[in-house]
Amino acid sequence: MAIIGVHTRLHRIILLLYLNVLTVLVGADFKWYHKVFDLDDSDWIELRSSNYTSMNVKSEVLSTVYLSFSRRNLTFDFPFYGEKISTVSVTTQGFISMIGEPYKRPFETQYVSPLMANFSPRETDPTQDIRIHQDDDMFIVQWSTMLLAEDASSDGYFTFQTQLHKDGTIKFIYKEVPISVADIVDVTHPVVVGLSGGYRYTRPDDTPVYEPFDTINLNKGKIASGTTYTFVPQPSCLQERSCSKCRARSEHCHWCPTLQRCSTGKDSLKPIWDVSCKILSKSACEEEVTNSTITDSLENLPSTPPALPNQPGTTDSTTASNQGTPTVQEQTEKKQKTNSTDMVVIKALLISTCAIVLLLIVATMLVRRYGWRSSTFMTHVKLENKGSHFNNEEVNHTLIKVEDSST
Image (cartoon, rainbow, N blue to C red; front, top):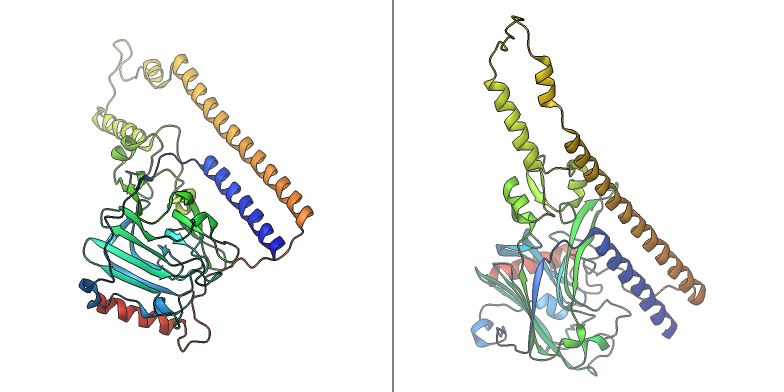
């Protein structure tokens, strides 16, 4: 087991290295969120208090069924990585999946995770519970006195909370953290604290797949009882709905006339952006202005061109040709810009090739040293509770009823 645990960690290190290299290559053109850390938990809203107990905020399924989830419809559209989210899934494992459809690997991306770990609520331990409350301005999830599956009660009880505010602000508030989060065992379940945004694409067999385009991993060593992490969303390309505002937002923002959307091409729009849009050497706004100017000029031209004094009925073809021909300086500048763009592309390809080769070498060395043993790392989050009286659809139906009665 020790060797398997080490081997699993090594595989995870390789994966993290790959994701970091990928982030560098695709480019975090700007920060999606501004992070603030406070040695304070004054924003905590106690859902176990008498003010909320009468509202039926406790989820019976999440509080008693191991590896379960509860899908909830928000009362407002929550901005997450520039997109509006209306449905989320709260899990027993200390995180919220922002994917609004059934998905087998929700811990990989598109999540809000105050403390993703292998928590184990049981019917035999009524002290553990998960409570959910929302109003017109905030969605709150509270994990109370949670125990880790690996070590029962020896590590102590965890109590923490996530708040999703209508303006897109996210808060992680920690009431009780008995041990260092960095010391939590991650062999059977990933331990993650942070945010991740992903884009969706569909495989040929119609299977949906989500790939991360941005991940924020917090410093686990800072998390302790009485602390708070706040994420404030930053302006992004995706929020702009006109070409001029898109270009004004950032040099990394590009306008796609086909989609009528603004994007870096590396965010949630990436799959359709790659198919429907392409970034030209000059911005789409300039193209539109140029085309509009040319059209207006053509419309204002007289139906019969002016004639030369000595040649009635003929046009000055030499003058017209010179007006449409770029100067030598313009041609040189255009060539320099093209060469500069080509060099950037070539450098990016060289860096990505070197990174992939390096990862393959490291992976080969690890396989030779440790062998390719199977690990107990969880390959998917179970969406049903084996041995219970509920199948997947019935559990979801029950949770929807609980949600309706609590809002």
